Image 1: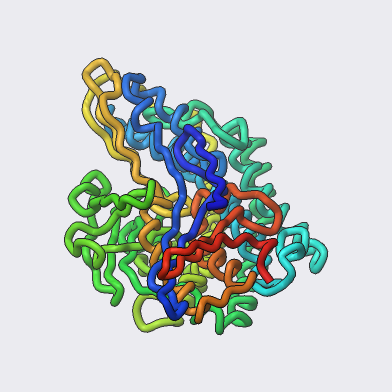
Image 2: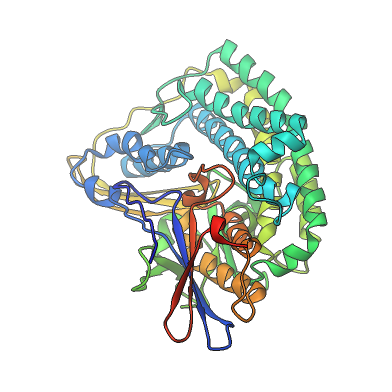
Length: 474
């Protein structure tokens, strides 16, 4: 097979994937598998380190959302040491997190999803990219770039640098916010709010225009999981809520009890694990995380503009909203919420308090930190001895939790668009659209302009294999 797989000896492969599509003798799809090489070495090489070092190390898990792992790790350390950060420390953590949500959601929608939705899935692939967006609508491209930059600038002001921050520590934050910094963040958020609303309006418009694709691409139904705080959307803290495909609550549990509800299986054809709900078993217990899941499990949003949009979103279905491309719609509502919530935080006078950290005494034990990454729920679970040395680490990240659903999605999409073995470039892009909707780490890091480096292998019933690349398709 003509197959290129890059192995990064870090947490996961970003930017490379392969799809195997199996056909019967009539050329109809019988199966499809999403294959990505993933090596999570962090869980092993963290063993033996001092637990308070982990928030500075695990952020290297990802260059797109290092804040997620940084904060989830700090929360796990808080749990081990039995400390609760001062209110100002927690507010600064949340503010940094909102900056990441703004940055990541703007990146995904405008750079990775919008070329398909705005320009169309069958446009020449040399034009179907962010440069094509810029050529078609320069003002939209400028706003996209600026909105993403604002998210990064918020992180930089709070943490001292925009990528791989080191400011969250057990017990709170290592750096307080200055009055001048508060003003700068407020000014940026005032700029971001109308742009977030405009992005949401654009997303709703183009999704309405692509109504047929929404019905046909990755039409699957699953369970959903996400953090809630007394029923409201919460991206930083709360309980973990799971609902079934009809919207019935299956569980609402303390994140520390995640192992009572989540199990993982392995398949001999994939490097990724396949998480599922223990109570429902496999495969009935397949669930989804990320923006669509979070809006499905919550009953309200605490900020007024986003809550109004949530009500409109929920009116799309009698029960959970299942269509996979609506991940983009949900993502834009979350981006609006993130701007609104960041404004709430920055307007609170306590945000510039100097009391951002309490002392944490060295001790052992175990702790779980959970947070909602842009791509879904992330669990960090550490065990440490009495000296504070790490004995064991368990990480369950968002992309892995969506892995079973991604496989269901590409199979459903392939079945919908491949008949009698005939395939065109547009099919490849529609399969990519199903994958991109989940914003998995590998897709987000694939910055080859206009395409994800994706190979599709068509396996016919007699065993012959056809490897398809974009530039070889009609």
